[in-house]
Image (cartoon, rainbow, N blue to C red; front, side):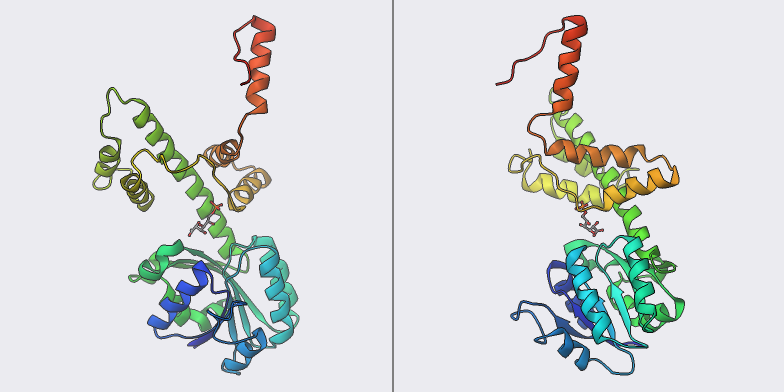
Length: 298
Ligand SMILES: O=C(O)[C@H](O)[C@@H](O)[C@H](O)[C@H](O)COP(=O)(O)O
């Protein structure tokens, strides 16, 4: 059983994970390019510091190029019997390709969807794992230290072979988009009906217990309204980091209808437009065919 791992990437997520792992009795050697947070100066030093019979390295760097770069280096440094854990939000197909490459050298690969954000340090992280059963088994103490307290199956799943962890996380994030959008639309309608609803924050807070729509995301919505009751301090611009797009892509690929998740994704795109060319076109067409009134650009 593995009780000492390497952790690459000590940013917002990795740093907190290192603390939670240590609090849970797992020895962690962390590496980050920023010397002030790193335990060792290089990735090679990290590999040298681990128990040599089975080196396990958890990668927690941003998805895409940064992750690819670290995995390239680990492919050179690690050897047969070692295990790489990809804990970022990678695309599941990349996991499958990478695992096949590493398998040629006898290096195991687990892809892990990690949910919980900055709250994970205290609450534990929801974990969705893909990979070979023997590799998952070997790393169980590490997963147990990271996941929330309580029954393992309520905060952890070995969802399938390589790719399953990040596929599960992708769908989880698609759901996240849809749920957030639903709370947000409900909030807007409550706030718009100010002649009837005089306490928007209180209304949403009252949904926190007992109601059908109570949830952690609702609790966070209530918290945000507590801090800024009219959300006046925020711009209406919402970013996305790819998981929603991948979920919609999968829906198209599999012919699975995802109307809510797609709408939530497109709402984010709309949030970034100062002016909507499409809505200008609709206004122009109404004017063309019906002589309907339009507003001039300012
Ligand atoms: O489960 C989680 O902890 C979150 O989903 C986490 O993974 C991250 O905050 C999202 O990736 C943000 O995704 P977007 O930038 O696409 O909204």
